[in-house]
Every structure is written in C-alpha cells, then in structure tokens.
Length: 197
Image (cartoon, rainbow, N blue to C red; front, top):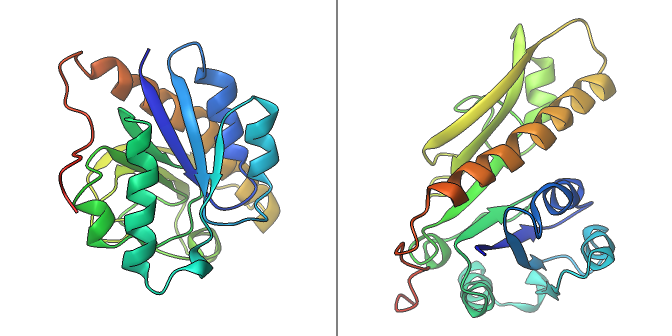
C-alpha cells in the first residue's frame, strides 16, 4: 500500500480529515511531522495511532538547517507523496530540490492571494467567488503548478462563515486529489530522491 507523510503546524483538521478518509483504505499515513511542539494536530494524529515526529524549528540556526533535518525525517519513511496540511513554513531549496513529490493546499484561488492571511485578503476583496487550490510545492511560495481548485459563489457571508465554507471545500478537495495522485503512480515510480543534499 502506498505511503504518505503529512506535514502540519497547527490544529490538524485537514490532517485528521485525510486520515479519516484515506488511511488504511487508499493508502497508509506513514507519519505526521510538525514543527510546532504545541500543535493540536499532534493529539489528532495519535488518536489514530499515526507516528508523530516533532521537529521544533526554533532549535535550528537557519531555515536551511531545519529543512535538511526535515528532509532526513521524511526520507526515513520513503513516502510516495508528501502532503502539506497547514504547514506554516516557507521552504528553502534544501527541501524543494530533494522532495519532488510534495503538494500543498492553499485557501485561495491561486495565483491570487499567495502567502499569509490569504483568507482575510480574499474575504476583503471584491471577488464574487472564493475557493481553495491544491498545487505542487516549488521554490516559489504558493507558486507551484496547480493540480485542482474548488470554489463557491459568495453570498454576503461574515468572515467566520466565509472561512467555514473554505474549510469545507478543503475537506472535500484535498483527499480527492491525494487519492488521484496515489492511484496514478505506477509501481515503478521512483521514491523521493535520496541522493540530493
């Protein structure tokens, strides 16, 4: 069965949704890795007996040093896919040049509203639609190739309602995209490059 590793930093709601819908059905969640020792997602993952590794970014001298340690943790599990689910780190080329099979979900219709506070910026815009994007991770922040998007028409929601609608789209779209990627990988597909450093 194909394996994924999930990276997260916070509440872990997308993490738990992926586990509930796909773990031991479509794939194995081999591990969940967080940079935040206080992340609520840690308990969510442990509830399903998913191995959790905590790699506190504050213990590293640079982003590159953290990313090197992160890459080494990921490679232990030989995942077919690395899934970023609320992983609040800007990744360096140390990560992106080695981990080629990584995807992320972003709470806007990229290329609009890249980076931080995307929900608030999207909400404050004059756009009549809003949505979420799943994309490949690249060296450019939220700039990798778009895999899929989902959207809704706005109806005078307040910020809380707006955010809830975005999360609902995330919970529907992300497992579907992961499922499709995993299914499309042939048995001979290479694992993550272990030689690059």
